[in-house]
Amino acid sequence: MGLPEIAAACSFRAAFRARQVYHWLARGASSFDEMTDLPLAERERLSRLFPRIWSSQVASELEDEDGSLKLQLRLSDGAAVECVLLEDIEGRRTACLSSQVGCPMRCAFCKTGTLGYLRDLTPGEIMEQFHQLSSRRGQISNVVFMGMGEPMLNLSAVRAAIAILADPAGPGLSLRKITISTSGIVPGIIDLAERGPAVRLAVSIAAADDDLRSALMPVNRSHDLAALKTALLIYQEKTGERITLELPIMGNSNATVADAEALATWSRPLKVQVNVIPWNRVPELPFVEPTREQVEAYISELERTGLVATRRMRRGRGVMGACGQLGDTLRA
Ligand code: SF4
Image 1 (cartoon, rainbow, N blue to C red):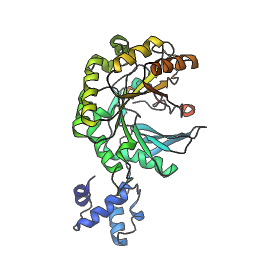
Image 2 (cartoon, rainbow, N blue to C red):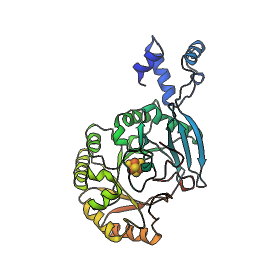
Image 3 (cartoon, protein in one colour):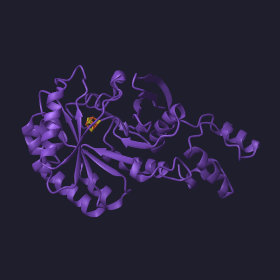
Image 4 (cartoon, helix red, strand yellow):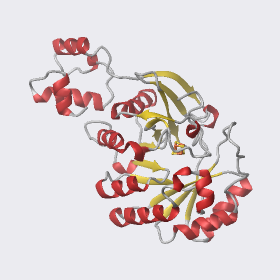
């Protein structure tokens, strides 16, 4: 809720009361008792009016040996989503948030894609993932929309959540610490380029060959590699920002040196960095994890062509919370 909605819902006559409540909510308050700058009688009235502030409840908490935390949230209508807190060796905490219940994109290498799509999340449900993770692990420095769902298909709610995440009255994250990751929805990329916010953009590519990409990512049938590249060129022209290309590679599909070479050729003249993601095993999917030699040869080939390539650290695998694994406890 923004200020006018809060003022109306709480029947405030004074505008500053809505601002006070907004500040508490944006910082993750879960009860009116915490709002100590409101008079006691007002806190009691609001508690009677809204016995619960958060609409979701944590249904399960799983902690990996590497420190990653995966939460499953049960939403008010019984649907469920997962979110993950990843901590790197320097102690930076990144919240990986979901934007939809399930996902309609059906990428062949992704567990979430097998669940189908149920509905979009509201801005509040997105923020509750952030606050639930933060209440357990403390200050979060980065947010990535790489959880369940395609954020470009729920862009208005994602935008509303980002406005709160970046609000100095709330978590106050820099927009540069927030990343939207898309499977390649062309109108969404252009919309983001034109209307912002100026967050970082990551795009899953998987392959730079239309036939292979269509097999791995059905989105390619409606937004093919040529259309995607045009959209990314527009994005770069408008924002001047470097784009991250995400490359999930599977040992028996798209991990050859020729695949890397094709990617390097396709990506010219985009200004990109490539994040190679060794595929994380999902038992029911027909892929195998790439060998270390495959990953190294793939990255070497990208570097030989002058591309900046990094290898995604594997985190959260012990709780099925790594990239492409979300949804193992859910049935959409
Ligand atoms: S990779 Fe992302 S867009 Fe593709 S099915 Fe999984 S959650 Fe959806």
